[in-house]
Image (spheres, rainbow, N blue to C red):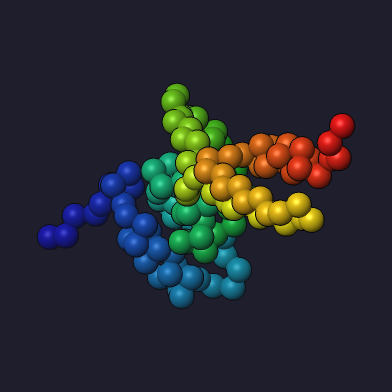
Length: 131
């Protein structure tokens, strides 16, 4: 009546259930059966080693070794061929007002769109004595 699923088509939940049943019924510290390792390797091939190991409560290193023994490539994912880098845009234009008061009067300067370097240069020019 109920057909057994192919190992390649098993979901993580199905494999997790199989592992839980085996853990509840095992005697002592019995080794994980080959059919459970095969199911775990199939899921790891599809979903990744770390995610599968966490979901099935397995040692990731042991799962990776099982994959290598089964002839499955465990290389990192292929890096993307194109990555778009978007430079952050400033939230707004830099705007400031500088007021200087001295014996001879007041000076008020309003700057829009000035950079920090521009403001530093302006400060130096205002503070240096006139020649």
